[in-house]
Length: 437
Image 1 (cartoon, rainbow, N blue to C red):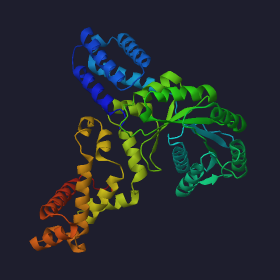
Image 2 (spheres, one colour):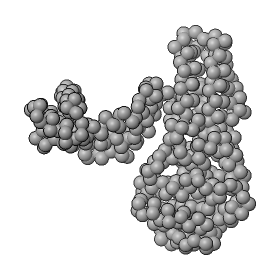
Image 3 (cartoon, helix red, strand yellow):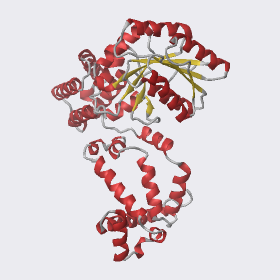
Image 4 (cartoon, rainbow, N blue to C red):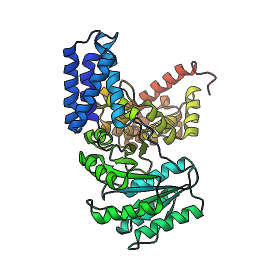
């Protein structure tokens, strides 16, 4: 995940001062020096680092950190707040037209996931109750139109297209006119990209902008490209006045520093981050939440939102009722596992929990996933009666299940013991939750 190495370095340097009752100028300068190295090694722009540290020093002097009751904690708060300012503490949400159709252009170079991100945004807006039209104005690359139609079909969003090798400007204008005539709330225009910035591309985009007068122009950039994000954003912004960025591959192992640099260098805020390949893997960007995660404070709000979005609420409620009533079965345990897997890798979930950031690097997602697969195989190889009450299983039953699931008797015993522990824990919780379900 982007920022993992930066998080490790920053939390380590700040931990050294966080618990101190007194803080000297020397200690504070040593901490700031470590922060400087951490930011530079994470590919943050040099001038951005200098300005950031100057702001932290100025704020520390203004709040008289050295003489504060808890100087270490105050310094952590100052660093946290300055990271939020660096990322852009304004409102990063989409600016919808209150009087009718909202036109949004999505621009970017080829290979940054522009077409996919356009569909992901449409999916997010549809969930918000918006009627969205996707306009296929990338008429140079035939696969782009087919890709947009496929994605549109997946999410139930209409796609407007006039085919390939037609005029992109006319396609955009006709698409917007169609959206107005048919009562759409949003027209998302997927424009052409190039392998590199050239005059023909920029002129075409300028012409489309002049014709449709978009409320938003969103630029897709790849988190893995490092400082080139800043250069690309600068060039597009100079010609088009970009209103926001969509940072793709945010779940990759990029250093992340370029993302911290881009708002300070260009003035363009980040509006969305792509965090996976699924159509639902796009998050609205919240600077405060990212600042929390960078400093190891977790991101419980995003975790709850993801749970609300991905979980089957009715199924989860039914499972909880049975568990708390003492009627928990192995089928319930299996359904709970399936629900929890929707949140993503265990290390990612742990990283969102406050105070658990240090554990993230110790979790082997492959081993955790394999363990869940074994558990699932064991349960699915049992009879209905055995799933209801595995305590009655004897050695011959366990050997049959082990053989049927391709596991060992030890694995079967582990699953049964895990189930019994869970059942006992839920029983103890039931007395505390009476009346809630």
